[in-house]
Image (tube, rainbow, N blue to C red; front, side):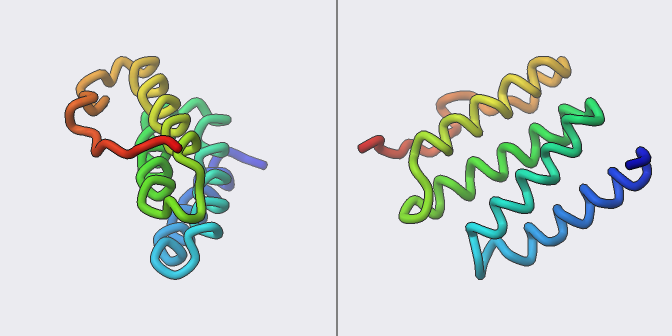
Length: 103
């Protein structure tokens, strides 16, 4: 797949995520993970981190469908990608994250 095609595919998947997130959170997560994979394959970690953070929020909001560990893992990945891209200002502080309980 050419670079432009990957960008178009990733952007289309992000749009699908936006459509699915209110009606089908599992499909929203599925397509967003595919988009994140395309962004990371291209080395666009800042953009991937932003969507990974969105994925973590989705996992947290839809706690009846997803495990809390999935949200934590997604937040961790987003923070690592932001840090690797020297975008520390984008990394939320631990105090700004909404707490949730692990079972």
